[in-house]
Length: 188
Image 1 (cartoon, helix red, strand yellow):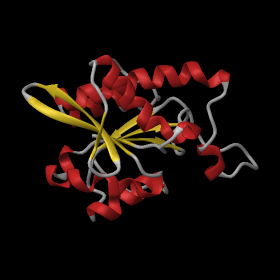
Image 2: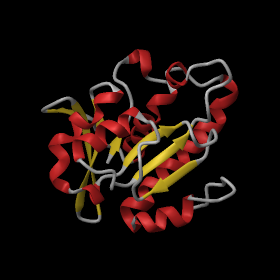
Image 3: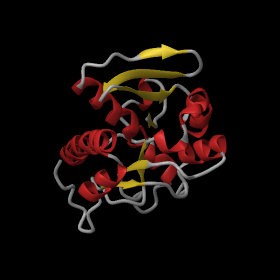
Image 4: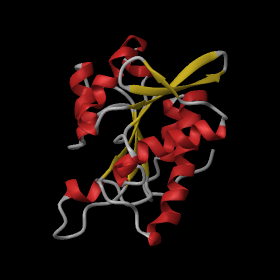
């Protein structure tokens, strides 16, 4: 499982780091420890149902995320779940998908390039589109406003539930529970 974001304190609370934020919540909930691994990544191991699930945070910038995942490639694409922000979803909405294109997301583009396919599951977390006259590249690197924080907190809580559901019960079950046409998050 890979959460996408940019390294360093400058980007810690930005929209583009929602993948990191979601995995940090999973690690906190299950009392996991992050460790630097060989190569440009950190990981935490989560023991679930007799198997280890690696939570990975690439240590490279977003557009190089795939490079940091290279050492985990032998697990197979179906075992990968990428968690990232999404400009094309309304703020606070999440979407679980079994595969698909990058949607212009540079981190997903890097992973697709590294794997040679876009056939891997992802959990996309809505940040909404950039406001008028604001470049989307600039927008994804901004922090959430005070007014948005409650919605983000609720979405991240739902993201943790979606991740846990995908790991324990499968991607199809996570899609059934968390992909709602009206944007509601369902319940676990």
